[in-house]
Length: 393
Image (cartoon, rainbow, N blue to C red; front, side, top):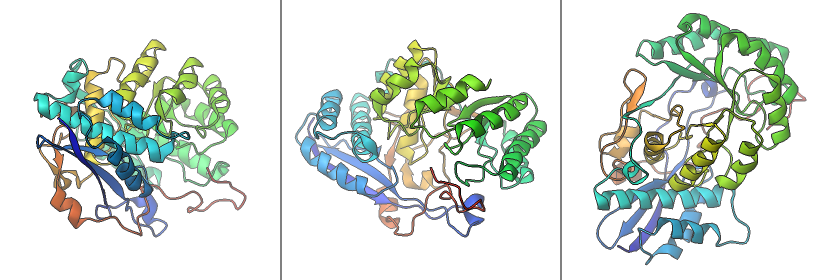
């Protein structure tokens, strides 16, 4: 089966309510890039190359032109060819483009075989996927309200970012508020619900240590990316100084970025992004590296439907999987052809349809073109009140 075309389709769903962005007069609007791969046997595969900048669409088209005529089943060969094509390689644009194409090739392979992708990755280890809700809120009261809305649905794990996105040098007021928010949520949900603390790399090591130790009594499941991900010595300093498990990885690329992180025993859980991490097979390799270091695995999947479905294939078939990384959005079913998994009692069913589990709706994509005013899901650093000398990550 030969590849006949690779097409990038940028799109933007309608804005969705986001209290953080609305508090500074912004809309939650983001651009996405779907990837469509056609074959000479009429089987079409879908992937996701979203990474923020729309320039990734051009990279998908450039790489796509290189693989037209190739056997769609030779996924590893195509990945290696694209990764090593340029002398300067890696980074979000190249890796995201490769990942989107790779996802679509797995989708084709599964559809041709009549099997879900996880059945070609060794088969399922579980028939449902533990997933979390959210406990975000501009105030502690708002965070409690959101947390309880999920708990009432049977969700047993929640993630929240209680920091005000002020920059690395957090104010005392924002620090106290973050701790108070976690405390309020813990008291509201009780001890049977796991709480993940998300920091988005916003703190300095000293602040992360101070905050982490103050949050320890409320038993966070993980302390995610407490400092910027670039400096492993800084991350290790935090890990050695707090008793909360550290998680990181959503902004690392491929197995080569993970080698040093895992070797140094810094984290309890890794979060490689299915798109920025290198695709399905690359994440499978990263997960195996983590398994050898007794580190848990949580694929990061917050973009489009195919991204989330790819993560579910990995969730189902990976021994050291811990918990699914959110990512469900209200527009998914409209943008998708097939039965998208729906969370029930805190778990997602594993997809059962061949390939990744469905296809993108091309009519919907055409009706939602990319937007020049797309802003994203989090406020840029410094948009909420802060001290003037704060620096941005």
